[in-house]
Picture 1 (cartoon, rainbow, N blue to C red):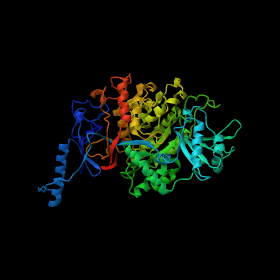
Picture 2 (cartoon, rainbow, N blue to C red):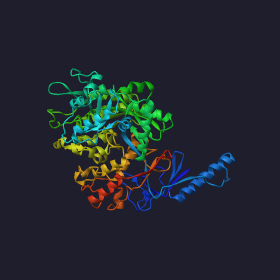
Picture 3 (cartoon, rainbow, N blue to C red):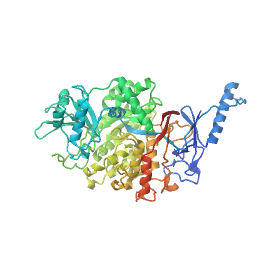
Picture 4 (cartoon, helix red, strand yellow):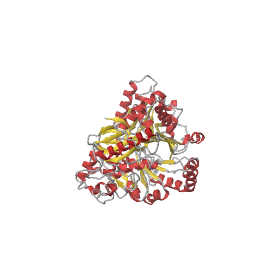
Length: 614
């Protein structure tokens, strides 16, 4: 057995959950339980230890209580073994237990990223990063510098450029790349990964010219004279990306291992991975090498469905470390690329008028793909950012209701369909998420990273934007994640974003619709219990209690206690009209949110084993 002691344990256990922690904080009068049924642990006298046996939590309580339990369990086990079965009375003295002193720090449930691209994230740590460039010229100079260090003809690949943050916010094209880097094919992904910036060399290798027709759900951008600009959008990017050399399987394992270590250091104990067969192969290879330390739920891409059906892929299959998830489909693009499908047109940009974004699939096409997957026992997650995209996707799921019920009965498991991102929702559609049982998989960092883009949204439409509390109030299930590498994976920065809806720097004046803020407690729940529910694992993961998987972290900041925050408010839901979440002032709220943002992880425990130590 292993005892983690000398800690402040915040269990986040539902008050009605079986295996209630020994402290039974939900029944004390010293702290008020969360209206949603969350027990954060007694604010004044929380439990101070967790006892683990193998991969499972035995109990949560005081060190003395848990040592008694460990002794009793050890004696009973030893006695039964020595006496040959039930009825043994002999007690073998001595207790072997591995005790880890947590140094008075805070234990929280392990975070799970509900939307991650692990292969893209691993590549982003190796490829050229343009996220800090502040102009087109600066970006081209960085590309030229990277190319100078590569053999002639080698692909120069990178990501992170965002024209909306450049000094001259105009679209890049291939002219500068052709002039500065003519001897290398260049492929640079936009920050949102929905637009690819290429040069003539790359387009030539891909066999694309001015006469190449746009594929369904994508486009090649042309200038006024009809020539290719080098910008490739949405599904058309596949026609270029397939020519970019991939790392070897061995190199991919090393990249993934490095990325896994980063995730563990940030407090993640699991991810929902949306990189399809590439991530499936990568994590299987890491597992075969006995190097997998993170729990992963794997999601498929559309073209992989026939293979998945043929091989018997069913949502919920797998084991404790690699689980089969669902199928990801795309309804639209992204806000930054002006390709999210909106009910109101984007403002005129570079001569474009009446641009409502891109519908990558029609409603009927989405339904047919979703029907095929659901009937085969594969749940569906559909990317939808624009309000019109979300409207269409909800219509798809409504048409799918009877098929979903039949599949759940046939495969004897829940089929929890999801909308990925759900950034802009028509007011009448908010309640439909709950009515249809559709999960909203959302990323708090998108809200604050998009602050400079919100002028693109028609205010008269009165859309529910990044409306986490609206969905929760309607009774919908919400799942938090990062969409990494589009956003950094650090979940504590995501909690800051949910609490403040303001720039990551802490500038309170930038707060967007503060009435839609969430408390730290609620944001943590959506990063722990939310992904557990989405994966059908809510009876095993997401909080700390007897019988749950031993996935937790030790950190230096208590998200439940802060100056200017009353104990009664620590577990109270958002929804106050002043947006202060129970803090005495905006300054107190931001002080606590920034402390959480800057949290340092001391230990990450997955399956009862320490997988990361600072």
